[in-house]
Image 1 (cartoon, each protein chain N blue to C red):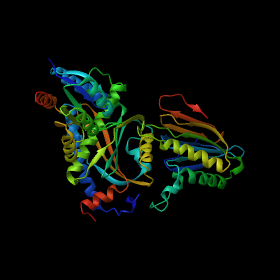
Image 2: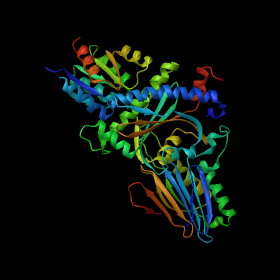
Image 3: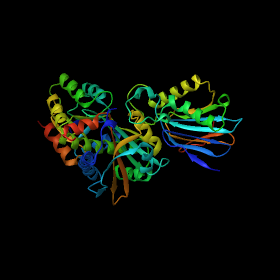
Image 4: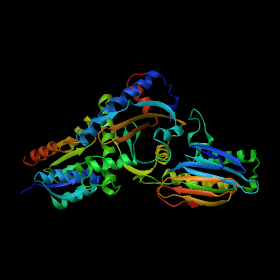
Length: 161
Length: 203
Length: 121
């Protein structure tokens, strides 16, 4: 079975079989979308919640980096290889607070999770599973033949979403 | 986020390398004193524009469990510091510093790592401050023990760095007799680089 | 009779290290404060002979703590022990009332000498 690695601020889509994996979800959120009718899967690894904060301030714009732009892009890529938008279901993992960050206020991990929930709702994609928050990093795997999502954390038992 | 508009040339990178040399050299002296004058080697600092995506590999792989001490410096410049140790090195460092310790990552062990990160960062900032006359304060350090990929991305995200490429100052430290290796990573915050270059009159 | 010292540092490891060095050299550690706020409170409750003070701490930093302690007790004897050794910071600390400034990492002799000198003044 082919394993396709999704790196930070990146996304990938696969059809029928294979495993999409992303490692090192700290405050980042991994977003897995799956169409079980057509066996099309996609995985995105977002770093920040909102691209609008950075309008015109970056040399190059990478939509996979931000929650608000990564999800629409992921959906578009999945449609391109035969996925049907009405069939997409989501599972998410990450958004942890690794450092105590003694300063007050919400951490970027929590902001990421909020932003992802918001964009999924806006696009009408049901959220079917999640493993978010906490204080540890995660690895997320999406098995494209079945839609199964496995989340693992250093030192803990693997969890199926 | 004005820094990505800086045109990086070898001259500018050389200046940053020199600053890194001096700053980290200072830090290495401090570390050596903490480890009872043990010989500490330091790799020539790498200063480059690198893809954020490539950074976890530079730390031994995104899945490698490490101890990471994170400090933000503010004042006249904003810089983010991350001191990263593979777990076995972290455990060895703890046994050297904490009497009767077997290298546990308990409260005292983690505290010892935090203090090493604090002192290394302080040494670097003191050197930089002496050179540039800038006032540079540090935040209280934080520590996490986790996958290196998770740690580096969390630090970058908290520093609100959205560029694909980050200016990375990285050096590796090695304590020869105790076989401890560690990496010091410095991410300049927005405007930090333009300020440094302006101060030093570099175009 | 050992001089009574209040140790202030946000890191447990540093508090332990200071305690070990000072106790070995005849000082009595009467309390440990984890931040500036605790230091100010403990000072007024316990009236130690000497205080060691870190600078970078959560809740209240060392400079602020020095100012508050000096306000209540202009005779307070405070020695800064910090990783941050920049000129402006040292001047700030001394102007606020600290009697000496030791940069980490320190040699045990240096801190013992400093406290003995300040303690007997």
